[in-house]
Every structure is written in C-alpha cells, then in structure tokens.
Image 1 (cartoon, helix red, strand yellow):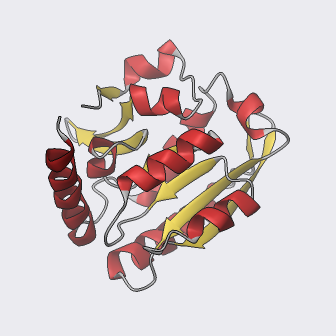
Image 2 (image 1 turned 90 degrees about the vertical axis):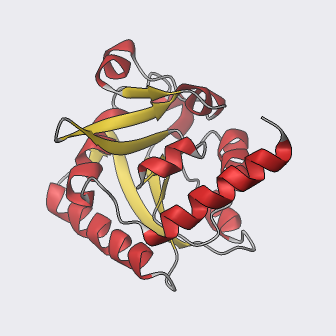
Length: 190
C-alpha cells in the first residue's frame, strides 16, 4: 500500500476511534488480556521480574476517560495480581500528540500498552515504540488492530473474541501459542 493511502487509512481509523466506544466491555477485556498474556511464550523474557501494563488515555476525550475508568475498575474487581507467576502492575499514562508518553512508558518499563479511544492516534509512532521496546500493543477497539496494534477485542456470534495481528505481535517480540491463535480471529497487516 502506498504511503499516501496508508496515511489516509490511519487518519480514518483514528477518527473512528475517537467517536467509538469499545464493543467488548472493559470488564471482559481485562481478564481476556490477562489470559492472553499467559499464552505468550516470550512473556518472561520480555518482562523480566514483573509485568507492567500501561493504559494510554487522553483526559480531554470523554470516551478515553470512560474507557480508562472502566478498565481500572475491571482490573481492581478481577483480583488478578499476577500473570504466569509475575506480579502485575497497572499504570495510567496520558496520551499526547507530542508523544511524551513514550518517555513515561520507558521510565516505568512498560511491557503492555493498552490504548483507549484517543484523538489523533499515531499508529506508526505507537508501533515503532512497541517494536523497539518489545511492548505488546493492545487496542480497546477493533479498529486499533486494523491500524496495526497487535491485540484487540471484537464480537463474533454475540461472543467476545480476541483479534490478533500476527505481524505486529511478532515485531513486538510476542510469541502467542498456537492454542491461543486457534481461538482468536487473525488479522494480517497490509
């Protein structure tokens, strides 16, 4: 796909994400994400002694604030404190178009980046950061996976389903098991 078309597609996806709310509730997304992490053969190698899950949100966007609040409540209510025996830390980072969030994510040694609906989502910047730092990207919206993030959530036959971009996940150093891939809907990046 040529560069101009990619920019147009990513711009359209970002506009959709701004107006959208997750199709799978965060109360379902959080435990699915925690379970998916247990199917990453490279988890311990990527994360070290703990798993740091960063929630990227934009305070000026109502859908983003709501998604963050719902995700935070889901994490607290789940009782999930470890992933494959590693302590789980959930931290919240403010998304900005100047990309200062990258410094914060690097400072807390992010292992997973969960993206809420934000304005002007820079898919390329997020993918480049995640690839260089070996951080799994997770979108709260299916459009996020179509934009190049690795993992997201959709609905199929009225049931929640994981959506995985294999190329993006490999670039991020993630090796999901065949068992998980059989259960997920696979999307291949253009």
